Length: 291
Image (cartoon, rainbow, N blue to C red):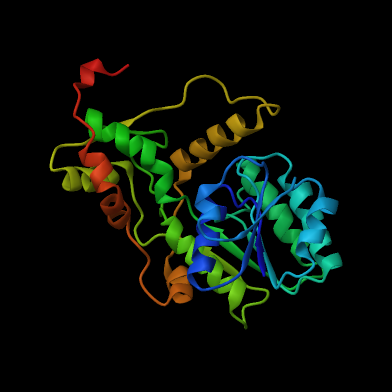
């Protein structure tokens, strides 16, 4: 049995699906009892538990062969909560923990990266064999902006027009996670997961235009107003993240990911192909009609 936390989110669901496709038994831990048809369709063992209550999580780990520890994004409880779950995994005798981190967690200008860096530091003293997956930003993060661009002909970029991101396909991330959860000889390893091409906003606009068969232009959308205060943690993280991307980009090498997968990483064009039907169905609108 492999336990996946935060399984109701996009990352957790993708990892559960990748494990299911390998024939693995999965216990999917979700935070609420709302319906999760995308998980129940895979015949997983669905468990509802609060990740910030390790005493509730620990019994779910008793028969676990591995734990995929993913924490909800932009959550201020991650550093303390994930570290507490590592202790619960040790007490339950879990033989393998894979932590879902982020590319360059040491970038302290982004608070949610710094939180993951602190969890990675705790792994060394956690008493459980571990591996770390460090993905770049997902191609799917752009889905809303891509749909809007299909309508307006304008791809709005909050990170400017000059810096690039090595966007990674979530399916590749999930498949890499499945490798780390099930294969031997990888303990103590930290594995980056970056897409195959550094993509600027104009390059993304060009790829979208090729798929749509009509012009798309990248438009810089600088942030407005001051950085949100610390108590608005998620909003502050998002703002500081895009400030960092605007100044430095967010790129990496695909070599480690491709070694785990045993094949080339999926390019953004593959994700656009998956969205093609939905994007083609979006009627073009006049730019003047946009707010």
